[in-house]
Image (cartoon, rainbow, N blue to C red; front, side, top):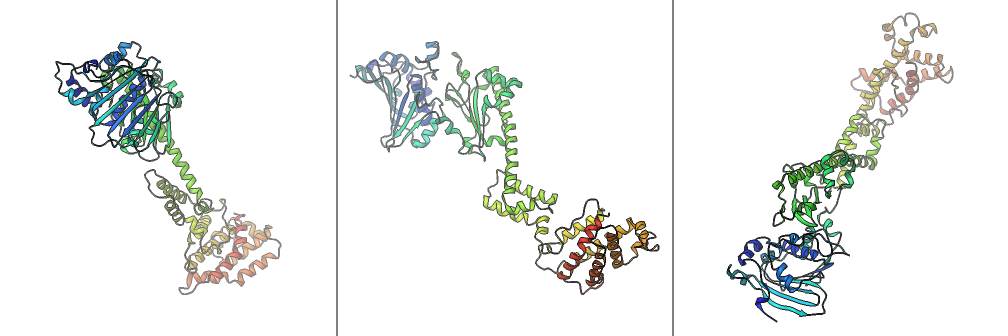
Length: 588
C-alpha cells in the first residue's frame, strides 16, 4: 500500500538542511542518536548491521514500537520536547529518556540521502521512506510527505523499530572496529541483560556492546592508577564543601591514568547525562588552565544527570560537543567544584607516582647482584649511594625509553665506578688484612690514614703501581700509632722501665726515637698489659720485625728513587704488623 499523504513531516523542509545535515557529518555521532532512541523505546536488544559493499546501515530494536499516529506525532514532528509532553521524562518502563529536542533523526541526512523507517506495534506494521533530495525540493509553504510503504498492515512480528540508511553520502564509511569504539565512547547504558547492542558487518564481523564497552573504550591500554568518585574520596568529602556538594548532587565518575603519556585524542574528561555523551573528551573540561603534565596521562568521565533534567532550558550544545558552563551561576559553580576535585586527584596522583618510583628504584637497585654487593659493602660511602640512587632515579623516569636490559648494563657499569667497588675488587685486597679496621675511639689522624690506604687501592692490573703509596701510608700509620701509644702512656712506660727517663721526657723526645725502637717499645708495652699470648711473644714479634727489615724497606720507599719493596714483601710486612696495630688501637 502506497499513499504519500499517509505520513507528514511536521516542519519546514528547509529546516532539515539547517538542523539536520549541519548537525553531524560523521557516522558514529549520527548512529548514536538512533541507539539512544532505542534506549528511550525500552529496547533490550539492538542490532546494527553495516554493509560496506551496498553502503547501507540498518539499526533494528525490540522496543515498544510506534503506531501510525505515533510515527506522525512523535517521530516526524521535529523540535517537540518529548519530556514536557510526557511530564515525567521517563519511558513507559521507567527509563530516563535521553531524547529531548527530536532533532537527532534529522542528523541522518548528514550522512545519507534515503532513510526507511519501519515500526511494529500491537501487530500493526507501519513504514515509510524519506528522501533528502525530495525534501530539498519541497517549498517551505508545503508539507513534505514521506513515501508510505506500510500503513497499519497486519503482522505477527514482535514490537520494535528498524531504520535503514541508504545512499550513504559519507566518502568513507568508518571501519567497523573504529565505529564500535566510537559508539562505545558515546553511551554508557549498554548491558548484556538490559540493553545489548550487537554490531555486525557483511564480512561476518560481530561485536557485542555490554556493561564493559564504555569504560574499556576510554581506559588506557595499561592503567596505572584509578580514582573513583565518590568512593575513593569519603574522607575528603567530609572536610571539603565542594566535594560534598558534588556527592549530594549524585555526581560520580572515574579518572584513569596511564604509566606513560596518552595519545592526544585520548586525553581529558568527558561528561555524560542520562548515560549519553553530553560533552566530548577535553583536557580543559573543568579548568581552562589545564597545563599540568598530569593531563597528558589522564582520561576519564563524569556522570552528571541533573544537567539534562531541566525541562525548559537546555545546557548541552545541540551537537553534544560541549556543555554551556557559563549559562548559569549554578553551572559555573559546578565546574569550579569539579575543577577542585581534579586538582585533588592531581596531588594524589603525583604522591602515588613518587612513592611508586621510590619503590621501583629500591627494587631495581637490589635486584642486581653487582649493585647489591656495592650497597652492602662495608666500604660503601654516602657519595656511592647517592650516585647509584640518582642514576636509578633517572633510569626509572617515565619518559625514559631505555630497555630493562640497557638499564641493567648502565647500573652495573655505574656500580663499578664507585669507591666501594674499587676497594672491594682491588688487586690490593690481599695486601690489607680483612680484619684490619680502626675504631672510632682512635684519633682522627690514624682513621684518616686508614681511609687513604683503602682509597689508594684500585682495580688496576699493575700490582706494582701503588706499592709506593701503600708503603708510605703504612709507614705513616706505623709511625703515628707507635708515637700516639707511647706519648699517651709515657709515665707508665717509664715506670715499667720500657722507656728511660730521657726518652719519656716529653712528646718531642718520643718523636726522636727511631721507628724500629718505638715499635719494640710498643710490643713490650702490649706484653706488659697482657695483650700478647705470653711474655715470650714479644721477642718473637720484634724478631720478625727485624727479620723482615721493615724499617729498611719503608725507609727505602722514602729515600730511594729507583727501588722499593715488592708486593710480596709489603704483604708480609702488613701481615706481621696488623695484629699488633689492632691491639695498639685498644690502648688509645
